[in-house]
Image (cartoon, rainbow, N blue to C red; front, side, top):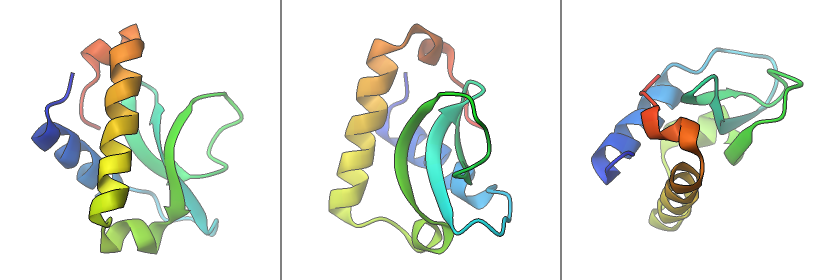
Length: 90
């Protein structure tokens, strides 16, 4: 399970490493055992999405309220999903 600093690092890395796409909406999701920031149409497989926005919005940063919301969603997901117990940063 991530501590708050590890979670922040995982989210920041996912956003930094997001692939460039012509799709304007991205999401932070748990896909292929990692937190990733991907274009919203990257797969047709069902998976957990934590937050959706434009990539520019995510790169400019979250408000304290958005970050708290995101932390809560990721923490609750990791507590309830066994595959997350071994999750690694992307």
